[in-house]
Image 1 (cartoon, helix red, strand yellow):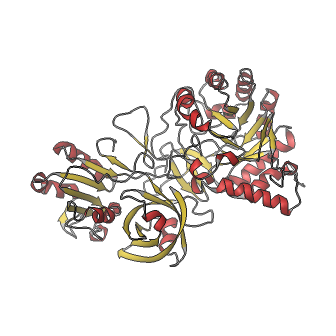
Image 2 (tube, chains in turn purple, cyan; image 1 turned 180 degrees about the vertical axis):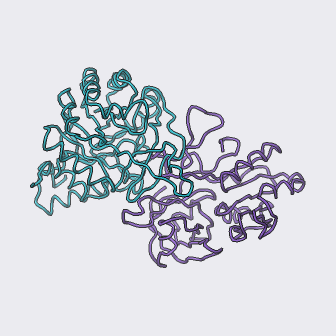
Image 3 (cartoon, chains in turn green, brown; image 1 turned 90 degrees about the vertical axis):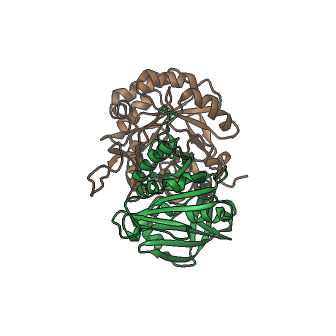
Length: 253
Length: 305
């Protein structure tokens, strides 16, 4: 991990209110793994004060992509940065997904902005594994399928794809999942991950999830982002350093 | 060879410069060492240590506030035993004064921790945390109670010859009284300030933004309060002060020294720019050169009121 100033090349709005930043950062792209994250200082001023964490969305040569929506002042500043300005990036941080293993099909499961880390994962696994993506959101605008493959869609209000949540959609496709050796990669809201954990335990599926927690530093010194471990109750794991990717069996959701 | 004498004294301890890293913002040194050369620093203060490991508070522990942040970590730490076994070997590799911050729930626990740690030669000083605002049974009541601060200081002093620093709470009416109690009971220095008690609510759910309800406010939002507290102590008590509170750049360091600080600690800034401490050391030296200051210690309490 290190701090680097990387020029912003492009800002795209890929869904209503969902932004994609393209940044020239060969220092980061040469080493970053899917599921790892970057902590970005959006201003040199003292408000907003802390860096903002973003999982790396995609890597294309020397360019990296970050996906986000406007949640507050920090992301608002970022979405309106002039092209060409330098982004102050601290990274790569945390542990990424483990793509190795004896499986035929990578099953990607995402809710809302939980889709963010998967274009890069899809890129790296293309041609090596089958890919099946189950993507959900509250409404059609929250279903983000950017650069994903073999997508099955779900929305809570039925405005796009299956009406219901993404785990219900998975359950509807259980025979398809049972017909091949799979590994699940997932990211999304806590309620989705909780339901997914029950689903994976029921069918004994191997599953890695990317988790999220408010944090100040992103590299272990603030101790601000605890997550309960299923094996060691006497201490917390840290989302930033021990995660953000965990095996779904290892953490209490 | 440095052109300016940046060294300062805290009790019997001489620091090569006034820049220290604050407890709870550098862990046990290993992560921050990837960004800042620890050998250049005046000192580093460990995450608060307690006799036994502490799990800390459940999430959410942190929330950003205007130009600041609230934290309620709850003194999560590895405990004295693991610290000595697993953390000291890394810290031994550096030539930087190591100050152990101790947090405890009882006076006996403060004494016991100090007794054990004082045997370790790598540890050059103790900073006694009598003021953590997030631990219900301990810190806050100590930090608010003049007699308790006096007693903790006296009892800890009795078991160590090393430099003893008492970290004071700003959540009191007259901080100078606490500095006086620390001095009268044998403390070599005080550090000021710990975080201020704060809270923030989500206006849609009406729930507190951090699980502990209240947390400790840090960052540039608290700097003017910290400067006022340092000045209050400086004007009333003859004891070295380590200034802490929202330092973001070299100008803040100089301001804290003018207000009465012999040294300073960088805290929240480490989360945002862990490479900042090294840059700040260069910049305070530049300031001294440009302003004809030969010894940075001449800035201490040089206020013109």
